[in-house]
Image 1 (cartoon, protein in one colour):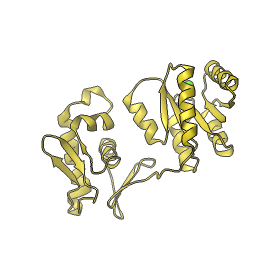
Image 2 (cartoon, helix red, strand yellow):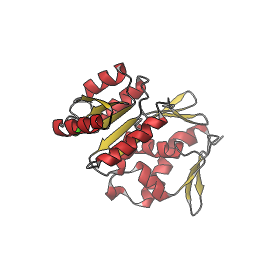
Image 3 (tube, rainbow, N blue to C red):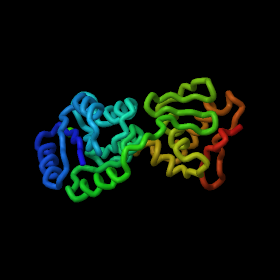
Length: 226
Ligand code: CA
Protein backbone atom coordinates (compact mmCIF):
# COMPACT_ATOMS: atom_id res chain seq x y z
CA UNK A 1 0.00 0.00 0.00
CA UNK A 2 1.39 3.34 -1.06
CA UNK A 3 0.58 6.44 0.94
CA UNK A 4 1.31 10.10 0.30
CA UNK A 5 1.85 12.15 3.44
CA UNK A 6 1.28 15.87 2.97
CA UNK A 7 2.65 17.73 5.96
CA UNK A 8 4.98 20.71 6.20
CA UNK A 9 6.09 20.01 9.78
CA UNK A 10 9.26 18.02 9.09
CA UNK A 11 9.25 16.23 12.44
CA UNK A 12 5.69 14.97 12.17
CA UNK A 13 6.11 14.08 8.49
CA UNK A 14 9.25 12.07 9.32
CA UNK A 15 7.55 10.33 12.22
CA UNK A 16 4.59 9.34 10.06
CA UNK A 17 6.80 8.14 7.25
CA UNK A 18 8.85 5.96 9.65
CA UNK A 19 5.77 4.55 11.35
CA UNK A 20 4.12 3.72 8.02
CA UNK A 21 7.28 2.12 6.63
CA UNK A 22 7.67 -0.03 9.74
CA UNK A 23 4.13 -1.21 9.21
CA UNK A 24 4.91 -2.23 5.64
CA UNK A 25 3.54 0.78 3.79
CA UNK A 26 5.39 2.70 1.09
CA UNK A 27 5.27 6.32 2.11
CA UNK A 28 6.21 9.52 0.29
CA UNK A 29 6.20 12.97 1.82
CA UNK A 30 5.12 16.24 0.22
CA UNK A 31 5.83 19.39 2.22
CA UNK A 32 3.79 21.91 0.25
CA UNK A 33 0.43 22.04 -1.46
CA UNK A 34 2.04 22.34 -4.87
CA UNK A 35 4.18 19.28 -4.32
CA UNK A 36 1.12 17.40 -3.08
CA UNK A 37 -0.78 18.30 -6.26
CA UNK A 38 2.07 17.27 -8.46
CA UNK A 39 2.64 13.95 -6.68
CA UNK A 40 -1.05 13.24 -6.20
CA UNK A 41 -1.74 13.68 -9.90
CA UNK A 42 1.23 11.76 -11.23
CA UNK A 43 1.45 8.72 -8.96
CA UNK A 44 -1.05 6.11 -7.98
CA UNK A 45 -1.45 6.23 -4.21
CA UNK A 46 -3.81 4.07 -2.22
CA UNK A 47 -4.41 6.90 0.22
CA UNK A 48 -3.36 10.48 0.92
CA UNK A 49 -2.88 11.83 4.44
CA UNK A 50 -3.45 15.53 3.99
CA UNK A 51 -2.76 18.20 6.60
CA UNK A 52 -5.06 21.22 6.43
CA UNK A 53 -2.45 23.76 7.48
CA UNK A 54 0.11 24.04 4.69
CA UNK A 55 2.09 26.95 3.27
CA UNK A 56 0.59 28.18 -0.01
CA UNK A 57 -2.43 26.14 -1.09
CA UNK A 58 -3.94 24.63 2.07
CA UNK A 59 -5.25 21.09 2.44
CA UNK A 60 -8.80 22.02 1.42
CA UNK A 61 -7.55 23.60 -1.80
CA UNK A 62 -5.26 20.65 -2.56
CA UNK A 63 -8.14 18.23 -2.10
CA UNK A 64 -10.49 20.32 -4.23
CA UNK A 65 -7.92 20.54 -7.05
CA UNK A 66 -7.14 16.84 -6.96
CA UNK A 67 -10.87 16.01 -7.21
CA UNK A 68 -11.28 18.56 -10.01
CA UNK A 69 -8.41 16.83 -11.84
CA UNK A 70 -10.24 13.50 -11.51
CA UNK A 71 -7.96 12.07 -8.83
CA UNK A 72 -10.19 10.04 -6.47
CA UNK A 73 -7.55 8.62 -4.17
CA UNK A 74 -9.07 8.38 -0.67
CA UNK A 75 -8.05 11.41 1.39
CA UNK A 76 -7.68 11.43 5.16
CA UNK A 77 -7.61 15.06 6.29
CA UNK A 78 -5.66 16.12 9.37
CA UNK A 79 -7.35 19.02 11.13
CA UNK A 80 -5.76 20.95 13.96
CA UNK A 81 -8.94 21.82 15.74
CA UNK A 82 -11.97 19.76 16.46
CA UNK A 83 -14.08 22.28 14.59
CA UNK A 84 -17.27 21.27 12.84
CA UNK A 85 -16.56 23.91 10.21
CA UNK A 86 -13.20 22.37 9.29
CA UNK A 87 -14.68 18.92 8.99
CA UNK A 88 -17.54 20.12 6.84
CA UNK A 89 -15.18 22.14 4.61
CA UNK A 90 -12.93 19.12 4.29
CA UNK A 91 -15.71 16.75 3.35
CA UNK A 92 -17.11 19.29 0.91
CA UNK A 93 -13.68 19.61 -0.68
CA UNK A 94 -13.83 15.89 -1.36
CA UNK A 95 -12.02 14.41 1.64
CA UNK A 96 -13.18 10.97 2.76
CA UNK A 97 -12.37 11.12 6.43
CA UNK A 98 -10.63 13.34 8.94
CA UNK A 99 -8.50 12.97 12.02
CA UNK A 100 -8.04 15.68 14.63
CA UNK A 101 -4.54 16.47 15.82
CA UNK A 102 -3.12 15.16 18.06
CA UNK A 103 -3.98 11.58 17.10
CA UNK A 104 -2.58 8.16 17.89
CA UNK A 105 -0.76 6.16 15.24
CA UNK A 106 -3.10 3.25 15.91
CA UNK A 107 -6.04 5.38 14.96
CA UNK A 108 -4.30 6.70 11.85
CA UNK A 109 -3.55 3.15 10.70
CA UNK A 110 -7.10 2.02 11.35
CA UNK A 111 -8.51 4.91 9.32
CA UNK A 112 -6.04 4.30 6.49
CA UNK A 113 -6.92 0.64 6.29
CA UNK A 114 -10.62 1.49 6.14
CA UNK A 115 -10.03 4.05 3.38
CA UNK A 116 -7.86 1.70 1.34
CA UNK A 117 -10.54 -0.97 1.53
CA UNK A 118 -13.09 1.51 0.21
CA UNK A 119 -10.78 2.41 -2.68
CA UNK A 120 -10.91 5.32 -5.07
CA UNK A 121 -14.36 5.83 -6.49
CA UNK A 122 -15.50 8.85 -8.43
CA UNK A 123 -18.23 10.85 -6.75
CA UNK A 124 -20.27 13.41 -8.56
CA UNK A 125 -18.98 16.83 -7.63
CA UNK A 126 -22.18 18.65 -8.49
CA UNK A 127 -25.25 18.19 -6.28
CA UNK A 128 -28.60 17.88 -8.05
CA UNK A 129 -32.10 17.98 -6.61
CA UNK A 130 -34.85 18.34 -9.18
CA UNK A 131 -33.64 21.12 -11.49
CA UNK A 132 -31.55 22.70 -8.75
CA UNK A 133 -27.82 22.22 -9.13
CA UNK A 134 -25.02 23.24 -6.79
CA UNK A 135 -21.31 22.93 -7.44
CA UNK A 136 -19.51 23.02 -4.06
CA UNK A 137 -16.15 23.50 -5.78
CA UNK A 138 -17.03 26.62 -7.77
CA UNK A 139 -19.79 27.70 -5.36
CA UNK A 140 -22.25 28.13 -8.22
CA UNK A 141 -25.98 27.42 -8.09
CA UNK A 142 -28.46 26.99 -10.95
CA UNK A 143 -32.19 26.52 -11.24
CA UNK A 144 -32.57 24.93 -14.65
CA UNK A 145 -30.33 26.95 -16.92
CA UNK A 146 -30.43 30.09 -14.83
CA UNK A 147 -27.57 30.80 -12.48
CA UNK A 148 -28.56 32.10 -9.04
CA UNK A 149 -26.32 34.36 -7.02
CA UNK A 150 -26.26 33.41 -3.32
CA UNK A 151 -24.36 34.80 -0.33
CA UNK A 152 -21.92 32.48 1.44
CA UNK A 153 -24.42 31.70 4.21
CA UNK A 154 -27.29 31.08 1.80
CA UNK A 155 -25.06 28.76 -0.19
CA UNK A 156 -24.00 26.83 2.93
CA UNK A 157 -27.63 26.44 3.94
CA UNK A 158 -28.74 25.30 0.50
CA UNK A 159 -25.88 22.84 0.38
CA UNK A 160 -26.96 21.39 3.75
CA UNK A 161 -30.41 20.85 2.24
CA UNK A 162 -29.16 19.47 -1.07
CA UNK A 163 -26.95 16.89 0.62
CA UNK A 164 -30.05 15.54 2.38
CA UNK A 165 -32.93 15.91 -0.08
CA UNK A 166 -36.35 14.93 1.20
CA UNK A 167 -35.20 14.76 4.80
CA UNK A 168 -36.69 16.93 7.53
CA UNK A 169 -33.87 18.93 9.06
CA UNK A 170 -34.28 20.61 12.42
CA UNK A 171 -33.07 24.14 12.97
CA UNK A 172 -30.33 22.72 15.15
CA UNK A 173 -29.15 20.34 12.41
CA UNK A 174 -29.11 23.18 9.92
CA UNK A 175 -27.07 25.31 12.33
CA UNK A 176 -24.62 22.44 12.75
CA UNK A 177 -24.18 21.99 9.02
CA UNK A 178 -24.17 25.56 7.78
CA UNK A 179 -22.97 27.81 10.62
CA UNK A 180 -19.62 27.89 12.27
CA UNK A 181 -19.51 30.93 14.54
CA UNK A 182 -21.09 30.27 17.89
CA UNK A 183 -22.49 33.77 18.31
CA UNK A 184 -24.66 33.29 15.26
CA UNK A 185 -26.15 30.13 16.64
CA UNK A 186 -29.65 31.19 17.39
CA UNK A 187 -32.33 29.11 15.81
CA UNK A 188 -34.19 32.13 14.41
CA UNK A 189 -31.19 32.88 12.20
CA UNK A 190 -32.13 29.72 10.30
CA UNK A 191 -35.65 31.01 9.70
CA UNK A 192 -34.26 34.30 8.42
CA UNK A 193 -31.93 32.59 5.97
CA UNK A 194 -34.54 30.12 4.80
CA UNK A 195 -36.63 33.15 3.92
CA UNK A 196 -33.72 34.72 1.97
CA UNK A 197 -33.16 31.43 0.20
CA UNK A 198 -36.80 31.07 -0.81
CA UNK A 199 -36.70 34.58 -2.25
CA UNK A 200 -33.86 33.50 -4.53
CA UNK A 201 -34.37 29.87 -5.45
CA UNK A 202 -38.16 29.56 -5.28
CA UNK A 203 -40.19 32.74 -5.63
CA UNK A 204 -38.74 33.99 -8.96
CA UNK A 205 -39.45 30.54 -10.41
CA UNK A 206 -42.90 30.06 -8.91
CA UNK A 207 -41.66 27.13 -6.83
CA UNK A 208 -42.03 25.92 -3.29
CA UNK A 209 -39.08 23.63 -2.78
CA UNK A 210 -38.25 24.36 0.86
CA UNK A 211 -41.15 23.20 2.97
CA UNK A 212 -41.80 24.20 6.56
CA UNK A 213 -42.52 21.13 8.65
CA UNK A 214 -44.37 22.41 11.69
CA UNK A 215 -42.63 21.73 14.97
CA UNK A 216 -39.81 19.87 13.22
CA UNK A 217 -37.91 22.12 10.83
CA UNK A 218 -37.55 22.30 7.08
CA UNK A 219 -37.38 19.92 4.16
CA UNK A 220 -36.08 20.31 0.62
CA UNK A 221 -38.49 18.57 -1.70
CA UNK A 222 -36.87 16.02 -3.96
CA UNK A 223 -38.88 17.10 -6.98
CA UNK A 224 -37.51 20.63 -6.69
CA UNK A 225 -40.86 22.06 -5.56
CA UNK A 226 -42.61 22.01 -8.93
CA1 CA B 1 1.02 21.61 8.82
